[in-house]
Image (cartoon, rainbow, N blue to C red):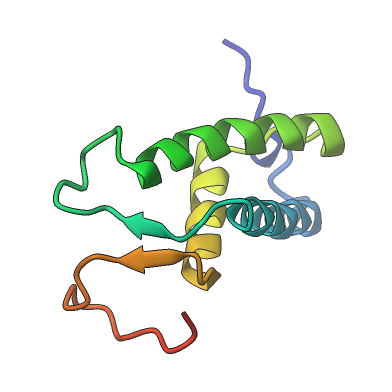
Length: 109
């Protein structure tokens, strides 16, 4: 199996990797705007049919394809995951079921 990830092929091109990651984060934020408020996890965080988990799978696939098509860049799964969750953290589209989950309250939601 050949290595395809741009980050692995050219790790010294830091500016390009950061630019693509910033674009990925914007891509996810724009996609979140297409959905109503989304409840984070719920009773079972491992319920793969839960809306958040289905959204994650779909957007990971779309973001990878988008990167390759528009930027001719193949992101690593870690880059996709990190930028997705950075966007989740910045978005006001997500509702937490348990406000006492150890995280400080968000006043911007």
